[in-house]
Length: 467
Image (cartoon, rainbow, N blue to C red; front, top):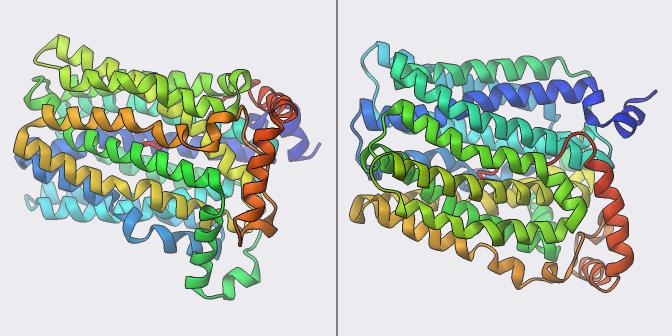
């Protein structure tokens, strides 16, 4: 039986290569979640950094999406994806190892933390674009929802376990040494990827020999010419902007306002991530029951108001519980939304444009992260972390607006794959969406059958941050 037949018969976990890809994602994500706690604590506890510098550190981690987001897609489409992911894993491991090495030599500074954050951010941009473009080479199209669901379950599990482990390690060995776990995670990820046996398709000669600017433009035109991808970009970009405000503020708030130590901080972030894990487990079935388009809208519309619990969190255990509860519900909605939109993106794009499409969307959606981090750090420094979290909550409430103002609000399911010939103009894509809206009955039935099949076994998908 072929790999494709096995995936169709028993789900993506029956494929050895997908299991290896999943294992690599598990180790890399677990290490990254430890660093989510440890790196800002290096700044706060070891270097006594003010709130603005902590926000600047978060901005440095995400600045790569603005700096190299667009060319990363075109360059990735010119390369084989698996070797690229292995190289970026090794680079990130080396960067993280430099922190404990500098601490042992007593030369660790904020400048080095900024540099490490920037280097790992650039490597992560290339890794993520390659990873999302590589999955459709391993799985058939009708298994992408289940495959993304399994990957998101792994990511969400790491979000639950990683911060708690990170907080405990910080208290045991210090924040500057806890990041070693992240380096080990990247090395294990590279090892698992090396064992993947799937023969990777070589990049098309036209992509390898063309103008980089022209190739970037082709990806931008494809995204801009697709009305649903446009609204996904706006919605996710706004959500990520607010997430960055939260990321830049939460460590300072939980340590200096709520009064948590490193272990307590890790436990709060782990409890917050439980919502994301539940979302990962439920997303496939929710999409099958209510429709892929509807679940995108409802997931952010219903869960967004719980962000108001963040600025209400005060000192002590009640404040920690409020913060964790708000984050858990918002994370549930974000993960369900991500599963639906990532699976749609991978299925709607021609294979030769996957890297550029993913990079263009990441530039638009994740490029807001450094801006949000700078705003969060500035607000927390000038007016306090509670005010920063209040503005963050207001932004979360506005996230569903682009979806409510788009054709998606009238759809049950998202349309099928777009023909490659429609990438240069808006006409064919607009017609596809119009057909999906007016032919809601038949399209919904087909979509229900498609997503019901992918909901058996593993479910759902991913980021974000937060995305």
